[in-house]
Image (tube, rainbow, N blue to C red; front, top):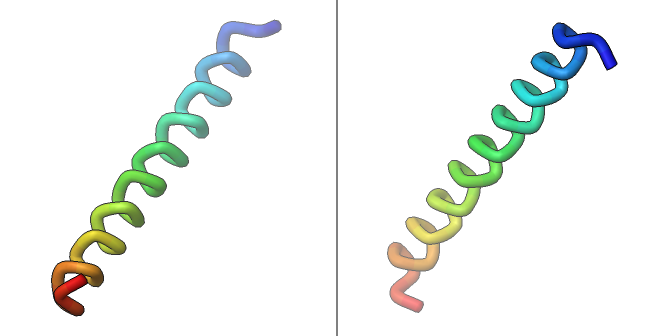
Length: 36
């Protein structure tokens, strides 16, 4: 595997995990707003 290709895949996984974390934060805020 090329080093550049490995770096691109890692950055894609990293950005996906950040988006997943942000969506979890939004869901928690929604639950807190609903008072669940």
